[in-house]
Image (tube, rainbow, N blue to C red; front, side):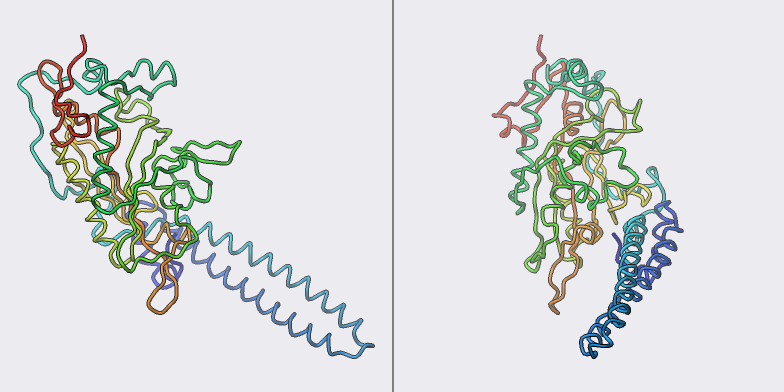
Length: 421
């Protein structure tokens, strides 16, 4: 949620942000009007309540003969107070709904536009080429008996799969390598719940325009998370944190679930776009003044992981229209996938500034002793999708795959993934 004071002080800045996102500028005017109505309703309620309190003292001091008439007036005033309170509550709810329709204020310099309007910040390595016809990760996974799409579909339907043998070892090795990196960088590991309450899911901003991507269990009123970011954000809901000594960092390991609604026909082959996968997610709570520096640090950790996996990649500054409502800026890292001849996203890192913390009431104490919202950031450190780029990049002509050297200690020293006859 954006700062209500910013809405009042600089609505044009918010409209500029909405334009960059491709979202409605009218939402700002609607929220402004709702704020005016809310404050007016609160004022009427508070004035009536003050009048009621003062009148109550008059009734208490009045002579016995006058009290009957005064009590009747007090009852009439009480009814007015109750009505004003209900109006104030309704106006508050209307305002809350209106302000939540406004996306986070994008940071200056974020490119405007949609999915294709990103800016490439840097590249690392050269796209891999071969002197033989390379196989895609699905064929490699079949040859290695590492990925079983057919049985995944039989058991659970499309976009499901089994990782078996060296495939399972590859994912677990990758995740443990990322966990080791996270611990060295002062992240506290957490294995998070994958079912969360609506207020936590909504608090992180995932029940807006992309709510159809989320699995919902109506019998339990719980949501399956598409990233441990949700549980990690909710971990400190309604708390006051001490961020004076630097970021509070968590690394959340979880299975993730996404409906992939609207993705029919896209990346059906293999495990690039699936309903279930594992992920290690970085999450930071920081003082708002250092959020952008922390954002850069998270990206540097991701780049170090990708370099350790010996992958070629590019870092992009995601355009405002592709940010999602919570992010003020997002950097994606896309690895080269040889058989597709293009870069595909492996990591995403978002600076959500104080947007999520306002919704979840996560604060820090200022020098004056008051409280203010912290900033939150999140970013992928490893996920199942990395297997796609690793298999395709490090394949050999005989269908074997060389395990990146840095990953070998996490796979029992295994150096080559061999095809199974």
